[in-house]
Structures are given as structure tokens and as C-alpha cells.
Length: 75
Image (cartoon, rainbow, N blue to C red; front, top):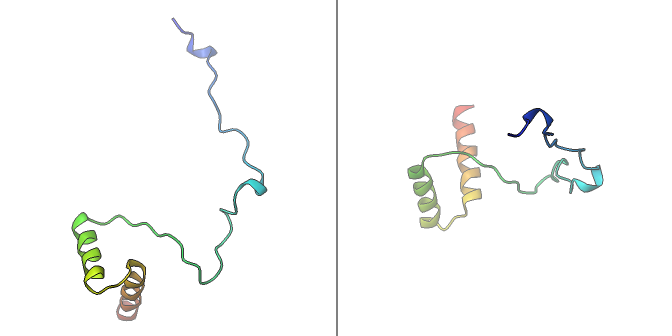
């Protein structure tokens, strides 16, 4: 039988030095696009993508247009 009290637990280790973080902690330059994930129902996702395809639009600009419209109408 294994004595579990003698087993060592692996830790996270030491954090990487700032030069090894690949600048993942820095704010992206203004005007650069970044990823945004949201959880939505499959039906809305399908409808959103179909609308974009029907109007020959990319998803990002369509979302930005929707956001501006929402903010303008809902403060």
C-alpha cells in the first residue's frame, strides 16, 4: 500500500521572468483588434453568422455596429 503522506505534491513552480511572458500582460496598442469570447446559444450564433454572410460582412464589424446601436439606444 502507498503511504500518501510521503507523496509530494507538484507545485506551480516559480513564475517566469518578465522577458519570458511574451508581453501577454501588456495592453495592446490603440486601434489593434483583440479577441472577445462570449457564450451564446447555438441558434443565435447561427443566425448572427448567417446575417453577416447574407450582407457580406465580417463578424467583428457587425458586432461593433450592433454595440454602437445598443449604446445609442440604451445609454
